[in-house]
Image (cartoon, rainbow, N blue to C red; front, side):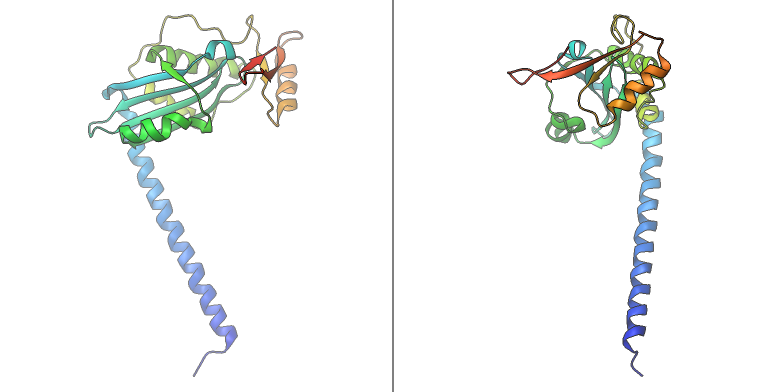
Amino acid sequence: MAKDPRQRQKAAEKRKKREIEIREQKARQRSASENTGLSELLANASDYPVFECVISEGWRERGLAHILLARTLPDGKLLVGGWYVDTLCLGIKDAAVLPGLAPEDYQSRVKPNIFHDTVVFEPCEPGLARKITEGAARFAERYTFKPSKRWPESRLLFAGIPESSETVEFGRESKPCYVNRGESNAAGIIARLARNAPEGGYLVVKEEKTAAGAEQSR
């Protein structure tokens, strides 16, 4: 006996629901497997030689740094950590861990567009990269600015790398300095500084574009 239209619709909906459940279960299994593999890689990060470490040009002047640290895995692929760092106030704005990258993919796809931003990189001593990221995170946390959720795992790429003795300034004149780059939550950032820094103990400046397109703060 043929099913009526309502029965056919219910059966189709049931099949579709089951298919979605199966896809979600497989996605969770893949994610768990990938996370387990990544955890093992990060736990052994100190065993992998540094392929390169780079930082965006002009980071000291801007107070904003893009940093990449790549380490070579036994199979020749790369384990890459990336950090978008505000050394003046907000600390680790974004972080990423990219395991198992082919060197050519790293050079052609990841490096030119890390954090969806085009920058010019220059070599950076790995110990300096560690000092910048960890110092910026500590400085920002004084004023309750939390680092990116990926920071705890991404910082494991610095295992075995001693921190540089080079001087790095955080804030300006030892004060947090928020450079308003057009963030939608600018008012909230300033309010947080007002709550957590002593009176007169923080700075707020506006970043503007020069005629040549370069950015500067005032």
